Length: 288
Ligand code: SAM
Image 1 (cartoon, helix red, strand yellow):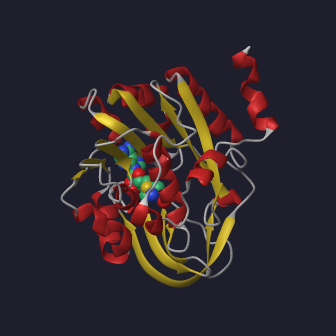
Image 2 (cartoon, rainbow, N blue to C red):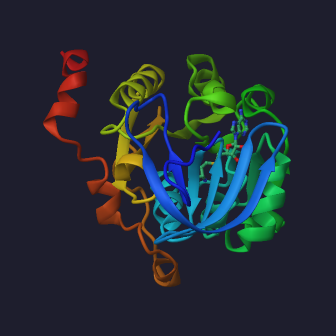
């Protein structure tokens, strides 16, 4: 449940980073809904615009969600020769689907969101993200992604795990079993990419996720970026593929596509995988 740190502030705290908090002055409370799965809050936060929080965790902010969703969508899409059929687990706000629809080669997006109320509220208050869910190429399922994933072997070019923190309903999305199920849902040259927290703020969670991907795939990596609306100001994704490297683009955005990007570029793609020695050394022993 979200706790108020000071009168009039929204404060995010989390057992993953005890003793710290991210507070935002609330300019206007827009919606507060106890859904069947979580507490859903929508409010205007000073400096961030409209914000969505689930169980007290900030999920997206109007001012910088493009950073998260462009990095999430376009690094794997441009690392793949020609993605046509993709799956999103979570992502009920629709923003990831919005970015994926920019790729003309993508013919079909399955999106499995556990909480229909997230879609309802985002359709009402975040039309610039949720309207993507009405696109004819998008199929929305309201199910637990941890179960849905077992019903689609070998179907997808890319699977995106757009989950929240590994607490509550999101916990199931960080397990070995679930990621192995995600891999089984991929075509042989498919790519799996998952929200994997911040290597700076919760290194233990991110290191464990990196090891899961290293055990599952011939080629894997973690790529990171700065984003002010998440605690610690950084976040990252683990990505894996058995067929080829994913830390360099296979294709590039051309023509008008580049005009629809504010965060992603080929240079940013490559640079986002460059991690400092203290982090790389954690995996050095694995390479000997
Ligand atoms: N796009 C968001 C952002 O910008 O950070 C990422 C978070 S997204 C809102 C997280 C979504 O995952 C939520 O809508 C939540 O309801 C959904 N979710 C959580 N656990 C799930 C599960 N087991 N299966 C499917 N969806 C789940």
